[in-house]
Image: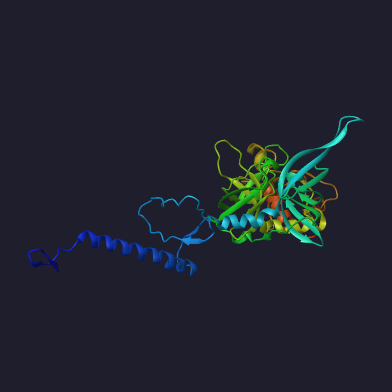
Length: 409
């Protein structure tokens, strides 16, 4: 109550402004208390989804709610940093030391006084095994082809002279062996047979030379069991069909022999080639590790692939004019493809089985064959030296059969 000079008394009006100020002060103090006491406890118990690293190394967390649509989150205050480590970065850190550079060194001589060697090319390789203080590297055959010496360049730039244990033209694989004293470890092998189209993959290698060593590209598996024709002789005809994994992860010259990795950090393919055309983008290929392992094991053990040998000079029937099918070979109109025998090697399994020049093979072990690639794949993948093989062929228009016992190539 307020007393006035005349002795009367009246009730004083409430001061709304003072009440508002008091509410603000109390709310501010309460909010500061909650921020200082409650928020650190939420962080300690990991109840907040986002982590902020403060300059004083004290972790704070901000509970963010989506602002709607595709709006970007409010930028963090100056001096803060966000931990953006991902599964990819973790895999790359783990696998990178096992991917190496491979340099093809060839000798040259231009006279009695001028001799030496030079780097004929570089590629990539993967350390897949360490045993008895020896490290083994798988790379591509075309990377080390024609080499007099091979140097392996480790992740830290260390160069180690390596021995070529063996290589194979048809699978485009080669195995190197070197001292493991400076090698940190080997990669884990995966199973390419269970890989799926659309699965994320990482390619690691040395595109365009060692200056870009350890380059990482990411993509997906675009296709499985792709058949890519290979022309080894340069005559424009396919000599082989490589079954490969297709990926859109960038693979460039120098990536050959590098690693194709799944999201478990496992090796599922050996990067081998790409389609190099101006109108083509994102089509690269890798040799599946499931089909590479038997070849790697034999190259490491024997130094070469031992394949079944028939002993014929053969060409696809499709390579000669169809008018000659009827006129020179007397083939019936029902024949649409086959293997034309140009010549038979003396004392070969083919000669011992009675095969002759101008015979046309149409079946091997009950399976139709139409091209020279079909013949080679059957011999190299389905048969072993010493196996017997049933051959159905036409001779001067007459359908005949023969059985041959294959020998070693």
